[in-house]
Image (cartoon, rainbow, N blue to C red; front, side):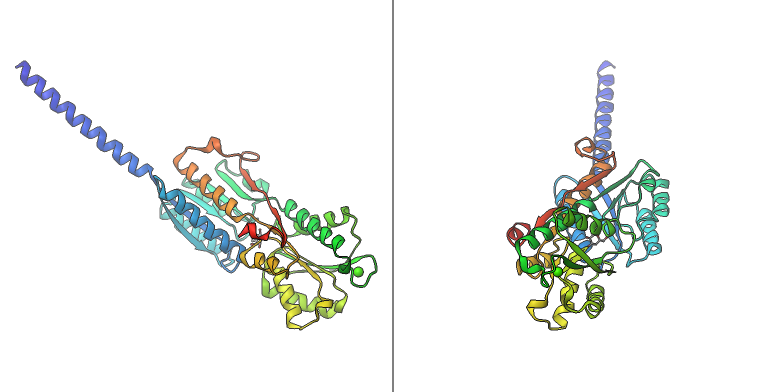
Length: 342
Ligand code: GAL
Ligand code: CA
């Protein structure tokens, strides 16, 4: 009888162990998987496209270790309503975390409500929601860069160039006649970059005369068009072109190329971003300089934060500003150091 009892107990014990192992395995398998939803504002934006490519690489890198990450990417083609629908679809498909590059940075409420209903955290990136919206919920984060820094760096680079190249003041009136090509109205990287670039130039003692400022929405073709208008208005008097990004600086250069002007009347061009094409233009000295918008750093920060949020570990190792923000630094790029950015 005793022996029989022992056998029954042993069998029950074994069954329990098998059951627990099965549970643990199931748990681990489920825990090792993450579904990431990425929504971005427009695939026709050069910098964003390169940032999204880097982001995919980062998730692949993390996925190759001991976790399985599935990434679904949606392009809103410039419509906030489309993006709201896309986010809803991503959530319905069961995504565990959202990475959102808003179309309209002032209009994230719909997306925040949808995510909060399902308790899915959001990492906004590149297009920064206003501070009040970031306070709507404690599972909202932002990864980007400080617009002021990029503007200051662009202004410093331009000031250094003007000091070292006396010919920059072509009409020798002691002032630099300049025009600005600005990004989208209302974007945190547009007006702030312009203001700080001008402030830096002035603080370095450069006398300036503003001729014109046009919005070209980060876009090369629009910038070419706006530059054509400014050239027809100001003829050969433009000495400096400050553009809020590389694509617009290159668009401005396109306008001069189209007009087939001689080297002697060409102004100097400054961009921001260090996109592949922007870096090449700096290397070839078509752009005098640019400021590196660290897409690799931003992509790595987004991916790491996303994984930490899903698996609820590693959050302590992440350095936040005001508990929600991660800002990656910019870097100055000239023809001297451009090779280190490829
Ligand atoms: C900026 C970048 C621009 C454009 C914009 C889109 O940070 O410099 O080129 O991509 O973001 O939001
Ligand atoms: Ca001048």
